[in-house]
Image (cartoon, rainbow, N blue to C red; front, side, top):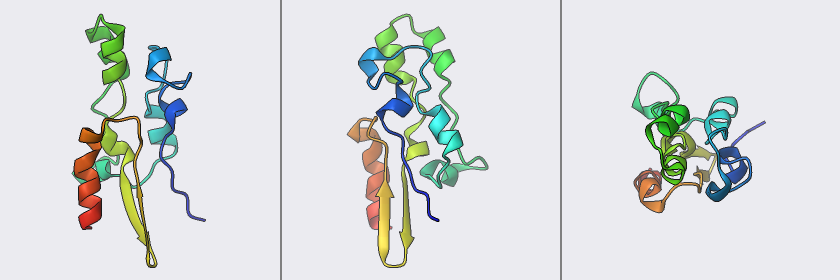
Length: 112
């Protein structure tokens, strides 16, 4: 069986939106590790994940909770992927990120 997935809003924020986020939300980290996909992050080095964002460290560094919530999500490279099975192409991404952060990866997928 083929399993392809990207996280939804509740995989980033338990209550479903950044407006109701808290320090204890997972910010995509649980989904990234427990439902791992062959994502763009795996192209950049020996690890299949980009673990550069530590949500606890982000909250420790920002006294403004709104800014911390905006920066605490796992790197978007963990949630962008494209594959081909037969003559069907699949392109997926998590919509929790600004378009400007996703556009380069989606352009790469389109040229693939």
